[in-house]
Image (tube, rainbow, N blue to C red; front, side, top):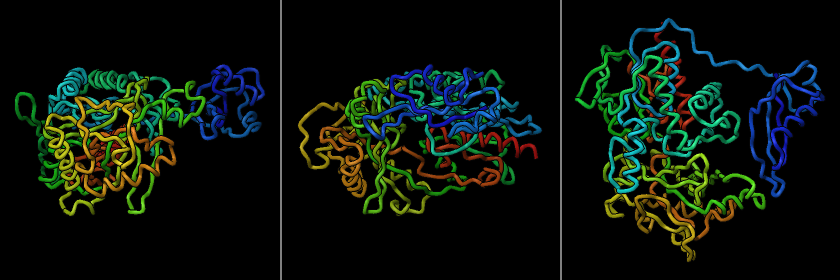
Amino acid sequence: MIRISDIKLGLDDTESDLRKKVMKKLGVNNVRSLRISKKSIDARRKPDIYYVYSVDVEADNEEKLVKKIRNAQIIEKKPYEFPKNNGTDKTIVIAGTGPAGLMCGLTLAQNGFKVILLERGKCAEDRKKDVDLFWETGSLNAESNVQFGEGGAGTFSDGKLTTGINDFRIQKVLEEFHKHGAPEEILYSAKPHVGTDNLYNMVISIREEIIRLGGEVRFSNKLVNIKTDNGTVCAAVVQGIDGEYEIETENIVLAIGHSARDTFEMLRDININMEQKNFSVGVRIEHIQEMINKSQYGKSHKRLGAADYKMSVHLDNGRGVYTFCMCPGGTVVASASEEGGVVTNGMSYFARDGKNANSALLVGVTPEDFKSSDPLAGMYFQREIEQKAFGICGGNYSAPCQKVGDFLGTESNKDEVLPTYRPGVVWTDMSSIFPEFIVDSLRDALPLMDNKLKGFADANAVMTGPETRSSSPVRLVRDKKTMQSNIKGLYPCGEGAGYAGGIMSAAVDGIKIAEMIAINTSK
């Protein structure tokens, strides 16, 4: 198979034009197959905007053809292979059904292992009802919300599948997601996304396959303790609907997510090794999506989909400020998982057709900011900000909101950007919510980012906060070779454990843990 890269097509060209161009490059009249492996938009030199493709082609005399053209190479696609193992008749317990837990459970079940997935929240169908009720009324279910429930925090997001890691398992994740309902374009898009509407159905389909393969998924069942024998896992203690019970097991996967604060405290109290780590705190910033489109695509913006952006700046005070989890045509959503705290996040449907664009605008936080040796000090730092926002905004899960112009001291006299956060916002001075270093860093960063994306610091853009759950504030330490914690058979996994930063990297980490369990149980 030949992979040909850097094929440029105009905005009006079709896939038929792509095929013709590929055959012309190869100097042939036909090819046996042609498949897009990557598609992106190059808008660096407006108004000269075009699509850039990489394609995989099967043809006769490939070795001879590949020598004719630039940016071409012979490739061999290998299917994903799970490590050879002797198997085990012992149950593997997986705590959490986010991307890490689901992919770990699915991979193990596909290879003959018996798995029980524990999810403290509800199934996707019931979880959605609880989330909708919270957004409409401010009535929070602390065990079924944007953070807790089937699919994890990613279920109520844009479902971005971009990642900074380079791992062969990425293809398996994409293929599984597509098999279970994600759009086909995730297999080749340079910036793939699933959308909340597709994620909802996708996680249900993955759950159903795990069950079909002999696994179990237990909702409203929370891991509350771990029993050990001579430093080795021997049982999971679970709080279920009808009370507490135990599951005998020698292997527990901790795919608990970044918001399982009570579980972090339990793990600390039983002396599981953990450490403070860097994370970020800030706000959600909203603009009119059309303004972003014009800034990114110029006169061609009406012919292209909703534009995104990604920016970062390094300030003189040593802090980094960056945008994260940008949701084109999306909404800012209430994402609390504890009573008495306000948390924001971003969400969009696959069509990305909402009026507003939103993104997290985050300031780096380091352990030096906590002034405590407690490994959970960062978690308590987050909670303090969330509770302050809750109290200032009336104690009903309304969120603090401020126009960028008011925040920067410039004029803001239009209401063209309406906050999308539900159940509602309270217009507030953001400096009353955050520590001074976060406020100062946001003020310094906004004009610098406006230099990169014209209109980003527009006076009438709005900021809603706080955004405190961008990543885990703690890392559950694991051995680099066996991927186990200081307790044999205990596997920290995914974003909550501090080893991932998004849906894709968490899903890949789940597969890695599945492989390691197979290797370790075969010894």
